[in-house]
Length: 437
Image (cartoon, rainbow, N blue to C red; front, side, top):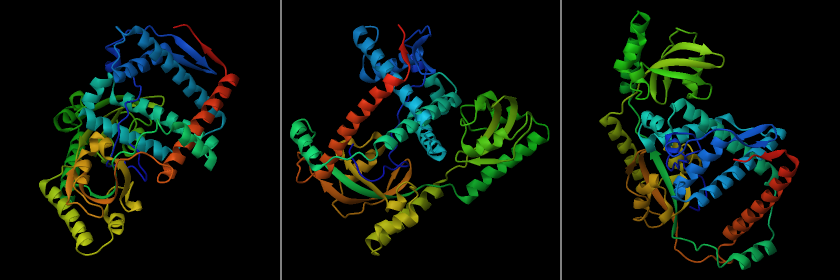
């Protein structure tokens, strides 16, 4: 989906299933592990290649047991991609490329939330991947950090690359027959009001957590109370036990409290976006800890829904009848932190390419004329109003009307070419040994 502006993290979440080992792969393979390749001081395991190839085969609808030649090609492609990734990570380390920890945490939370929404519960996540949520989260964190390092390295090397007018014209002349036509697209903005628990519901949850903590400190068994009261479906049946985990496996507030505990010690009440927690440290081994917890979420009541709907309705009335600026109202009231500073701008979207998580947006966008503001509508994120900023009918690309888009395509092709040449040069000076698999 081609777009401009900022994609809303809150509204339009695309979940990318990273190459994490799990039952979805393990059901189709028996791997005798070994080394597939050596890159500098790092290794690529045969299991990594197999897991990546099986996931790719699943996505492409290829049966590895019947389409053996196609699957062998996927394994080679996967190995080549893993070698390229290792080469780039080696170079990123040499260039001391850094990543923003806040960005890593934000993307990690976004992807774990997306998984939770897609699969339904932490238990389902564990069944799908065949491992605890903590390990899935750890694999995602490592993958995100690596991808950000590689992206930052690319930007560092090719940020100043440009294309001149002649290059754009030559690109269009060469590729115009194969360039995609512009699809029907819309430019939209929105304001989001989340349905938030009331102060009364928050206080009730906090008071229950307090009572449970007092009972634990008075001598009652933590695990028994966790089975009775905790609403974490992934751990309640195990007495709240999470298993050994490392830093980065938890949300920040939970992690800070958990790692501060000594074995046997019980935390104060800890609040995260999931609710209120009581944490008990079971054991510590080096930089890993095993804890159990009780989760008391803050419930959303019917009156909280009504309050959110009333607020978004009043905001729309101020815009439509009161002449207030949509942008200013978005900056003042929207709960979408990724778009509010841009006045709620979501940017351009092709009508037939809205993600599955944004079908409500497409249904509303189809009814709006340019300049119109929709009636309030609900998604799983809360209540929204949508404004139609512009529409673009389907048509072929032309230099006259679409110079910026064609220039961006020409620049992207040039970047890919320069990037490949650069990677090929890196591969010549970094030690690479491919083993027989």
